Length: 100
Image (cartoon, rainbow, N blue to C red; front, side, top):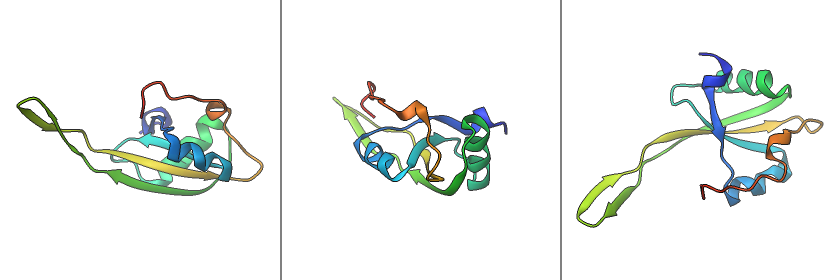
């Protein structure tokens, strides 16, 4: 799996935006990616040093629209802590239009 397929996109809701002060960045990652692959992908794409990676699976939630009922998709996210001297400029001034 190459680095671009491991990291799907950044996740920046209010909770993740608060973590930016602690130099922690949140990404949506491929469901089968493990911590080592996430670490290597972030270091390769952004050219930074990673101290720690935490991964978690986000479970699906039930949703309804009228009579039809369904569930949202399950997905995996990773919180990546960087070296204090490094940062990712992609997140600076980022506003989430998708409401995620």
